[in-house]
Amino acid sequence: MSFLDRLNRYRAEEESLRWEGTFADYLEIVRNHPGVAKTAHARIYDMIAAAGIDVDNEGRRHYHFFDRELFGLDATLERLVEEYFHAAARRLDVRKRILLLMGPVSGGKSTIVTLLKRGLEAYSRTDEGALYGIKGCPMHEEPLHLIPHELRPEFEREFGVKIEGSLCPSCRLKLETDYGGDIERVQVERVILSEERRVGIGTFSPSDPKSQDIADLTGSIDFSTITEYGSESDPRAYRFDGELNKANRGLMEFQEMLKCDEKFLWHLLSLTQEGNFKAGRFALISADEMIVAHTNEAEYRAFVSNKKNEALQSRMIVMPIPYNLSVDAEIKIYEKLIKQSDLQDVHIAPHTLRTAAIFSILTRLKESKKQGVDLLKKLKMYNGQVVEGMKDSDVKELREEYPDEGMTGLDPRYVINRISTALIRRDTTCINALDVLRAIKDGLDQHASISKEDKERLLNFVAIARKEFDEMAKTEVQKAFVYSFEESAKTLLENYLDNVEAYCSWQKIKDPLTGEEMDPDEKLMRSIEEQIGISANAKRAFREEILIRISAYARKGKKFEYNSHERLREAIEKKLFADLKDVVKITTSTKTPDEQQLKKFNEVVARLIDEHGYCPVCANELMRYTGSLLNR
Image 1 (cartoon, rainbow, N blue to C red):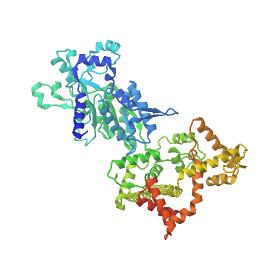
Image 2 (cartoon, rainbow, N blue to C red):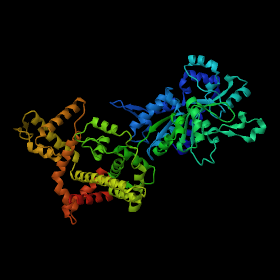
Image 3 (cartoon, rainbow, N blue to C red):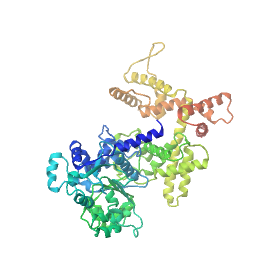
Image 4 (cartoon, rainbow, N blue to C red):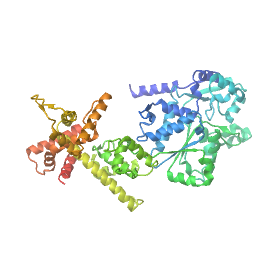
């Protein structure tokens, strides 16, 4: 299909969304599809739920609506959706509150709001998210407001739909002058929400308090029509084009809300509590909209400390939005930001983003009082990795130890900025972990606001991330040296498990070639177990633990692989690498390799490129760097 064909199809789809009819026609739609008259909060919750919800074994919910843009914030988003959106959708009192997202810079506050706005635009184009408004109304008002208050209880009993709110001044006048009070003939149209067209989505950003006018929120008098209509209280002489007017039926975003002048904030008191606001010389104007704002922690603390703000503060639901604390999720954030930049054609060596993520997460963690848990162990546990001596319950305890963990530290944009710096400095098409760590370190020197104490702490995190990369580098090269690594690991695992099973059940083991029965190979088992420091006294407990894990996997119908037990995986890898250590060391560090060594070197480089995601530049650099590590 050509682009022009797609353009024509798009135009046809847009045209198919248009609908116009009378109020009587609209009543039939409401009778068949009561959801069209849902509240703004209910529409937003249904939009989120429509994207899909997964529930894990522990009852935690994951909302797919946020998947493409937000990573590592599952617990925060679950609380946001359940405590605010879901409750508000059920008409509980939280819908009469301003949602205030509070957290550090680049933590995802603006992204959440943007997702909600874009999501509403798309959802209003679907059958499930369809909504309708009085044609010509500047606030695209719910047509059911035409029904007199006296008849609403009867309507609710018949249609099962609750009506809240009253006609805006413009529609009230239109009903009297254009339709003679006959509500059945009032024209209704389908409403497609759009921030660009200012339909159902409003945005307010504070500017200079001296020049900013309250009319930006509530609309203003059209002085050019005063002589024609004779009064400022005539709706035709008023522009209902403030952000609160235009956000009706959808969402109103306050950017940096707490920086607003007080006169702007007080307008929100009646809007949140009563669902209406004051504009011009009119009675209170009804509005059905979710109000969401965002700010940083310092601004919020200053706001709370001012006693004059208590009334507004009581009408807020404050939702902390911390930084992500998972290494894997942090990598996804970097990948997303890189895709949005012009760095897409640059090769980033494997483990580069992981090393940077380790540094970033370390800056956001708080030292635990739990014995034997340092920041690196805590980082690994938060990332879902198995740490010796730690259980799932320990992770829960760690998270509960500091409820505000993640509200401080370095933001993802800092690392992306340093990656950009590394690229420019190298003037190459490939960057690696060492380049990024070096750029991060140099960036700390350029930050005059960082204290000497904080700088030393951050430099220590750079050193920890460097050590982690060193281990990843050695493992990567050693794996590349072992031809068909997975197969070798699998063979070694099966041999080990055969001997462990025989040992624990006091049985002999049969030689696969001769058929001769022999005692379990203690030398083989100990050569693997010693790689991870299992003592002779602890060997039986370790072996029995492995058999229990195998049994648990079998009950669940899962196959036990070499990496199904973290410590056993580490032991097998170290055993395979130990057998090759001298070969790796000589091959990677020899300055004048012989023909055989050069051949082996080139084979490993080719394997790094073909199987591990390296380019020729970073593969050769990794080999040289690993050689220097092994010679230390």
